[in-house]
Amino acid sequence: MKNSRLLNPDGYDAEGQYTTAEDLLLLSKAAVENELIKRVCGAYRSNAYLADGNGVTWYNTNKMLNPNDAFYRPEATGLKTGSTKAAGSCIIVSFTRSGREYIAAVLEATSDTQRYRTAAALIDSIS
Image (cartoon, rainbow, N blue to C red; front, side, top):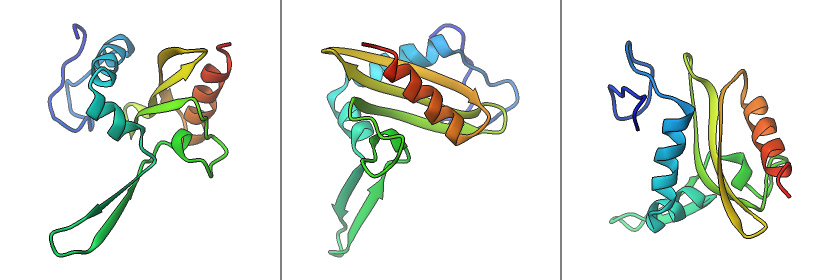
């Protein structure tokens, strides 16, 4: 990553913090090369049991992984949603199409719906 200045670990807006789509895609490519990260970011739901025996279920906010959502794409394999006032509504979506793996970035969408529509159009445009 050559054109990013990250000032906090969570990605929330900070004065002087910036990144580029290219850098986010480089980071995402490295992330999906790690099987654990790929598996965690590609799971729609995860169940765990705490030390006290209680169960907890976490749901991924990526609607493209939710088989009950209109934006669901079976080709989607992950990766990361996010939104801040400065960045807008964003998604880095990884997916497999025709035996090839892809990563696409949608940045600065004006709404969650727009980010998913744009990401879905990108996935659907590859034959």
